[in-house]
Figure (tube, rainbow, N blue to C red):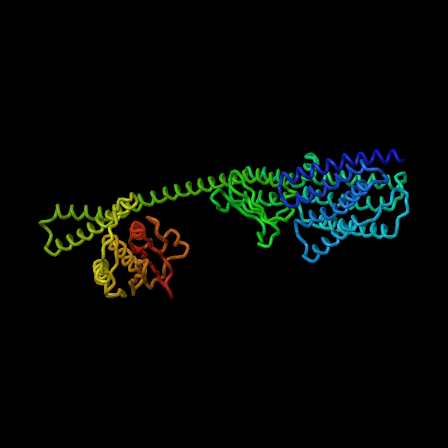
Length: 564
């Protein structure tokens, strides 16, 4: 029995040395406080296991006794270091930390004040028995806290971190059980000593797997999340919408590290996609740099230490997701381009139809009048001649207006219109425009403009915009029409408002498109170019033309121009 125990103890020597090496490697890899406490704990335990065989079973000299006390002190320090590892993720209250630190210092000081340490088989003095009881309570208390902390914290984690934390909790409980059995046993030859040694071996192996699990074991643990990710990646390849990409990939990406929320950003910091509840009170926000930008994860405090490999998986998946989002953006751009081309083709068709229709009437009329005048001039009375000339003048004016609108639109689209703002008295100019645009209906226009208002505007552009708005108010709205203007430190605003029915809500998005007319307006004369030209002039002036529904009814157009 003694030989078996000694062989098992030598096995433990090797196992705990490997555990210490794994803990140090883990700390050097992450450089986190938790890794440092783990490295200190297992290095201390390895030193105890490695040095103890070098000391005699019954130390005789003062140096040998002092060395044994150092080993016992190291053994007392191990559960405290392990406790510091467990609470480094979520620190406990100050009172508990102070109490545990004080108890640990008392046990360490007590160790070095022991007058004598009984050898194997010797009877324990009362003072030493009390010390062993205090030592055992201290050890058990700390390892119970470690076991509880790690076991309960792992419940909300992903598979790999949860398994690792569970193994560390199990190892902590096992080594405590080994210590209790060892203290209860009397000699190295007893069955209890063998059981304690074997439990210590199991604890060492469990600690080793918990700290540095083999890759094949991690892959097996991660199989549920991996299956979800594989399905998500397969769906990702066919996703053409941004919402599809986010919905397919981000949830399983968050699951693999147990994150409650995830956010993907590009290199410029623009949010490409997000999922989950990104609460500000999350334990920790982990930022993972990727070739395409950054992934922010709202995780528990345990994720960076226990889920390093999972974070690497997230980094790779984020790059794939960014590519998929970029592809979705290209698909969306292609759709928009196709729709724009279809819209342009529709506008072109409308233009050809409208131009043919609008030009056909005045051209046919002019042609008929000219032919009549040419063939029957001598037969016509003076009154008939005047009437024909009046109609001829009206039709040529109509055709001239249409041609001018088409030329205006072509120049604006080619950016060939030059805007030169100059000081302009607004009220007199508006009065001139109203009189020229609506003639006898000018009395139905209320001009609410301060006679002292002077604005920096381009006269030609201003005339074209206001005349179009006033004509449209009479053509498609109802009197009275109100024109108002104001100017502040940053903008000049002119408003034209009528009391008609307003623009149908479904037509508002297309209101300023060339050659577009609502169903209600198609029964009236017009080309569908006036508002498009007016807005183009406003934008050439670095401003805009805005429509909104008037109250209680009617349409309100507002010209907004910046002040230099």
